[in-house]
Image 1 (spheres, rainbow, N blue to C red):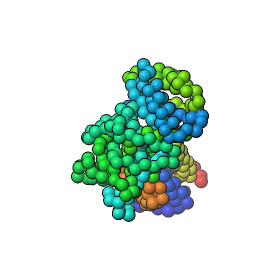
Image 2 (image 1 turned 45 degrees about the vertical axis):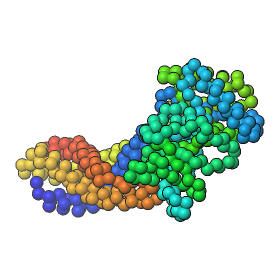
Image 3 (image 1 turned 30 degrees about the vertical axis):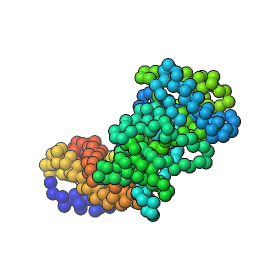
Image 4 (image 1 turned 180 degrees about the horizontal axis):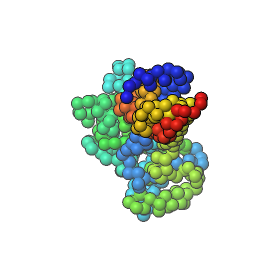
Length: 410
C-alpha cells in the first residue's frame, strides 16, 4: 500500500492526528517510568533481611519509672532470663532497633581517623552476645561477641566499642579485597573498632530511598541498651511456635515486673507485621503507578477508537468509491491500520524523548536509577499493540462499507 495518500489524508486532519500522537507520547513516557518504578518498588519490598522472619517477633518495652543505667541493665538481664526460659522461645536479646524498623541509628564510617570524607554510611545495631542468634543471622567469618565484651549503654551515652561485627556488604565496601576481618574502622571518632566477625546478610533499619546506596551496610556493637524508652526485645521462637511465644512473652514480662508498658496494638509485632508496615508506602506507590498506567492506556485506546470511528463516519462516501473501484475488505482494513501505525510511530518518537527526559529528572531529584532501554522498548511494543487493537473495530466497520455508499449524496 502506498503511504503518500495516507499522509495526505492525515495532513487534512492535523488537529486530530496531533492530539492522538501527543496522547500516545505522554502515555509512553509515563507508562515506561511507572513500570520501572513498580519493578523497583516490588524488588525493594522483596529484599532479604537475613532474619529468621517466620520465627522472630519484637517487643517494645517502656519502663514506668526512671532507672539508673545499672538498675535498668539489671532489669533487662532479668527480662532476658524470663523470656529465654519460656518453652516456646529459642532465644532473646535487647536492642536499640532491628531491620525494617524504619527508625534507628546510623553512623558515617571512615578507614582512618584523619579521613574527612566518609567512606560510607551504616546502620548501627547494639546488642549482646545473643543478638545474632535471636535474629537468626548467619555468621560467615570470625566470631560472635563474648559476654565479657558486652557493656551497658545508658540513655544519651555513646561509648566507643573496641570491637564490632559487620555485614558482608559493609566489609566489601570498606575492604574490597576481602580481608576485612581483623581490620579497623572508625565511626567518625579517633578510636578504632576492630572487625571481629562478618555476617552474611542483615538489612538496615531504614527503608527509604536515601538508604538505597548503602543497602545491607550494617555494623553491630557489643552493647546492652539500658534506658527506659525506645528499648526493644528481639525474640526468636522455636520453629512452629511463634503464636504461642507471642502470647506467653508479654504475660511473663508483666509477671516479672508490672512497672512497664507494652502497647497491646503496636508493642508486640511479628516480623511479618514489621515487613508489612515497613513497605506499606512502597506497595501503595506500586498500586498507584499501576492504576495510573492502566487508566492512561485505557484513555489512549479510547481516544484512538473515537477518532478512527469519527474518521470512518466522515469518509463513508470515499470508502464506498474505493470499494466501487475494486478495493477489497482487506485493502480498507490495511489502510486504517497503516494510518494508525504512522500516527503511533510519530507519537512514540516524541514519547521516547519524553521518557528519557523524565527519567533523567527523576534520577536527579529523587535518586532513582536510570530508566533501562528494555522498559522503553517494552513500552513501545505495548503502545503499538494497543494502537492496532484499538483501531481494529472501527477499521473492520470501515471495511464493510458497501460500494453503494459512493452513489449517496454528501
